[in-house]
Image 1 (cartoon, rainbow over the protein chains, first blue to last red):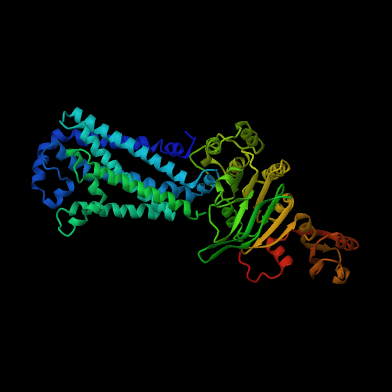
Image 2: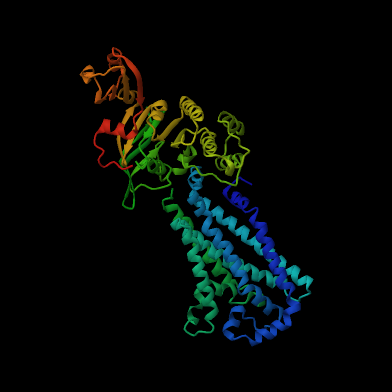
Length: 263
Length: 300
């Protein structure tokens, strides 16, 4: 488990990863399992909801369907929140903590290039995020099976995957900020603020005419704008999220290579 | 003798703050080079520049003839590093930490690691978070020595070690030198440098003041003496003795500073009824004052 930075980073997660996984799977199981019980009254409630609020809990055309319920209860807010907490927390602290505590100097006295440390840490984040996406999906699948809910497992996987991609884009942003500044407060603070801002922008844009043209600036649009739970993944939107992630990762690699490391 | 570390007008500013200024340093094949200076003089700045953790504002440096910026990887392959403010991964044991670093480097014999651990009496099975500062330093020393580097760059490595372990450490780096390894040892302790180094560079306020052979430094060694006599004495007894200064008599107690050989002074004192003699090791600042004068702008 200690043969490189990638595996060592995963090893550091050997306690938190199972906890995250259990948490995510239980949440999915809970929400999915409750659908038969509250589905009907839920549909009534949704119809009474003002449009300004309804937009935040999901845009699925049919609120009464399982897809509408799941979109509102899981994918509109909870899934992106969980993935962002995970990825921004990771991206904003993985290098920063080593730098603040002073282990980075000793690590880099070994003959490994700086860019490789960043790349391997990010690779560890990708694996962690995808593993958690998998457990979340498994929770949904098991919940749907137990509660006999008719819903496409594939579409749930596609939706979850889209959430993981959104998370990785924000994780890469956090990493890039830390690599450029060395400051954890920047690495976590700015992505958190931008995350909230782009969530609100994507949510309000359909309601506020002035915002509508800017909706495509929000990464959240590429996460859920094409409604992957109903329609499957939109290849263009996936490409935008992947491209953004790779761009920010490149910024992280270059910025880290160029700057002075703090003592 | 070939030059291993060479810096050319190496200068580093942190914004407006001085790191080092126009540093021209040469460390030679087969020596233990002491890098002596008070805290904040620029020792760590120099070392971190050599390892490419920070980049010079201007000037440059080479190690083994390789540029410290362009060829840092090739340099680090042949170099090890150890620092006083050592931070290790708290969630690992000593053995796990060392295995991790061995994987990153490759080519280390685990039996040699165990040998080093035995000599330093370091228990590698303990989690690092439970180790005292001195025991952490030992792990740091083992990682610096385990891959038998050509060059060891050690930034105040003995702070936190008890005297017995310090001695073991001095033996280890002297052995390393005898095996042909080069050592750059930074320190703010004159006795430490006098004890193990071949040559010493003295740095103060970011500038290299002088480079001396330790033998020469010892010849000019500075001691503050305090002698208690059985009867009152006058300073005439000590008049004309070489190297004696700052004479000050208070009842039967005589204070002075002696530079260089003590012999003439001791012989002169021997004629008088001495009750007690105390020799103080001067602080680094006093050494600077005595050798190089001035110190008005000295900042701790």
